[in-house]
Image 1 (cartoon, rainbow, N blue to C red):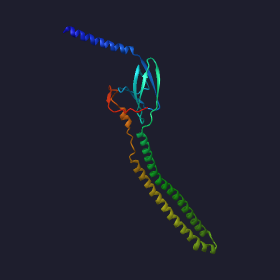
Image 2: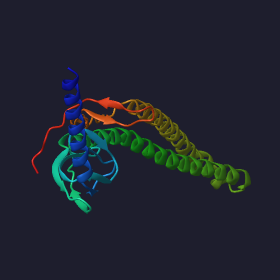
Image 3: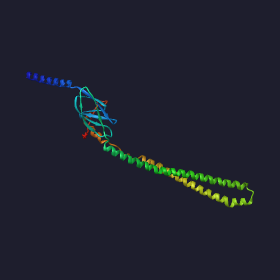
Image 4: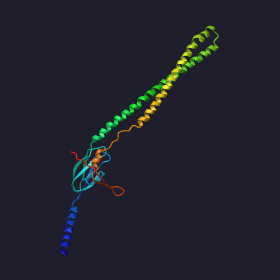
Amino acid sequence: MARTLFISKGLVFAAFMGSAGMLVGQGTGTIRLLVDAPGVAFVVDGKHRMEQREVTLLEGLHQLSIWAPERVVVDTNVFVIAGRTADLKVELPYSEAFLDFKREYGSFSNRRAWTRAVPAAVTGAGVVWSIASFVKYNRAHQRLEDDRTDYENSVEPAGIAALKEVTIPDHQDELRKARTGLIIASGFTLVSAGVTWYIRGRTARWEAPHFDDPEKVRFDGLSWMPGPNGGSWAAGLTIPLSR
């Protein structure tokens, strides 16, 4: 019994020393990722998730699953040579889901912009109309004031009669019309401004399209994610894509 136990311990020790020898004998190399996207993360051999752009790996063949926000997950194989640094250039295309989101968000933005622009333009036209009506009213009022001054200072009977019977009544009628036009223009501007404010408030509460990145779900395979409290496991699925 003791002999059997001694042999078993010897086998375990030999296996451990053999594995250690293989690890010591196996060198490491460096891979430098050149990716055209911010926020890049990758998983090495389906186990270790990393975010740095330069990583040291054991010599041999490794699988990298590379992802960035809004981009497609790209799976690629890389062979690491001991003692060497190699550049790995990868292009991550935008995902179809993100492109669909951009089109949907663009359509939403245009619809909201036009919905706000129309009443705003009407309000602007009302402001211009109100200013023009005020200028017209002011001129009509000034003409009537000039008529009254002429009437008080005139000494010619014919001129006084013309002012009293023709000129002043005409200018009074013009002033009434100008006042009515100013009231209508001002009321129109106030109403359109209220409608503009109301529509802007309503459109501000419209729910904008939201982007849920399905490629991130594919990328977040079962991998250890280091954190301030030690780390956590993230479960998901990565779908290999042909290069």
